[in-house]
Image 1 (cartoon, rainbow, N blue to C red):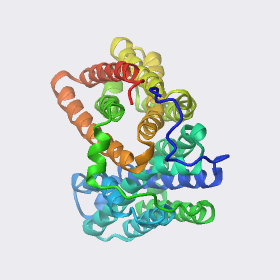
Image 2: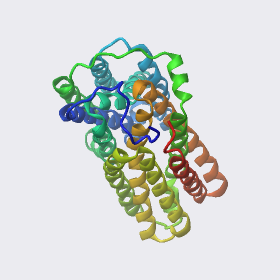
Image 3: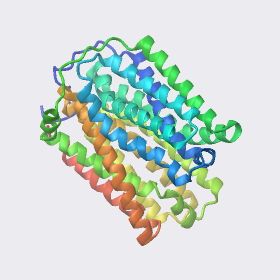
Length: 395
């Protein structure tokens, strides 16, 4: 068996059908996690003013979550191997509830940062476990579809969190936005308590487990594709607003509508990615990366047209929406015997790619203007698509 689209190993027991209520409860959890992660961006100005700190300093709340999440992913896998995975999942969701409660009542920057550290632990732990949980709750044939359902929470949060957070913050105060996020977390916790079955641990990961996984060619290829395509996205899309303002010269209302189209595209891309990954995860990743490259190339070559720029941005969103489920399915099938450890590697790869992409995009936008990071995004995504096609039969 050489193609990653073939059934996963016998280390994972067969289920007759997916435990869909439990899977939906995980989607609720990830919706709460990502909503809380995005909130500071939409309420940064009033939050900074109320805490008597600069906007730049308040923005470190986002940085703290990202840094802690990258460390927490592998750490949760290593540190909780003896515990029932249901208990670990519930504990991570409790951290989300507590994080929002602390943020909503913070009177200074210090407790706000504490709340974001707790959120980072919850995020990192969940992302490391998500694919392994999908494998335990669905048979192999339905695992990509189960991952797509779980990741629907990401797509919905991407579309809704920022505008809804800004609206609530403007009407009722920034603390109310965290209270609402906390209520979502409580809802997810109740749903998980009611639907997720006991999931006894199966073996314990060590640092050597991560090293052994990295020696698998399919794992290395998958991580390389993630580094390329995620850095491509964050290099280009981080600076999409300056591009839309200066090249097609969109007014702010049109920019908002275009970014909404990106989010909607991402939602449907996630669903399509789940279907395609069920056939071939590497080819799903290749198709998604190719769409990102196509959208970025259209922006670079024809982005002076408002209509083309809007459509190209939506295509980009559709492609990027399929990346998480394609990548998770790829890595999990290549490491069915150590899915949580593979999830930890994937999380680290995503965080490194985000950092590299945003940093590279910043250098390019300063050196070449808003077109620079868009061109880089097209090139890196095209290389990622080619790599995924070439690597699809690695083990």
